Image 1: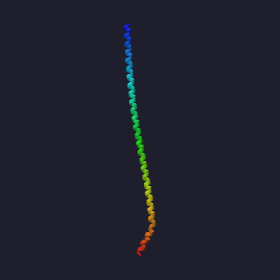
Image 2: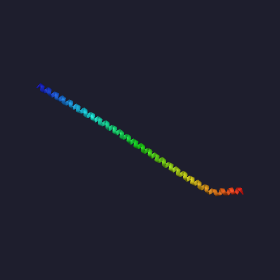
Image 3: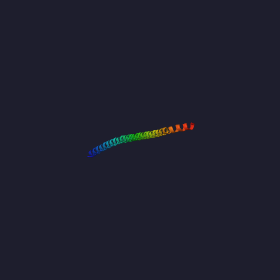
Image 4: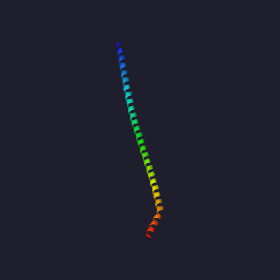
Amino acid sequence: MLEDTLKSVKEAEARADQTVKEAESRAEAILEEARETAARMREEASQKARTRRQEAQEAAQQEGQKRLEEAAAEAAKEAEALRSLAASKRDEAVSAVIAGLI
């Protein structure tokens, strides 16, 4: 009877040891999966940040280009207005110079 009890205790200890080993193995697998998931999430967040930064940079470049084009158009418009004004005053200037010479 004592032998049966000792045998039962040893079997229970063996099962307990096996259960502990399996639990440690599962825990290590869970930790490894968590590490991989965290690394993947960090990479995804980093990629999203790079994408947003690039989109913001492109938007800023487009806005700068738009403003540059608007300024160039405004300058061309002002230059044309000055040319028109100068052309209309040219005849008056020529007449004044001729009148001054006579």
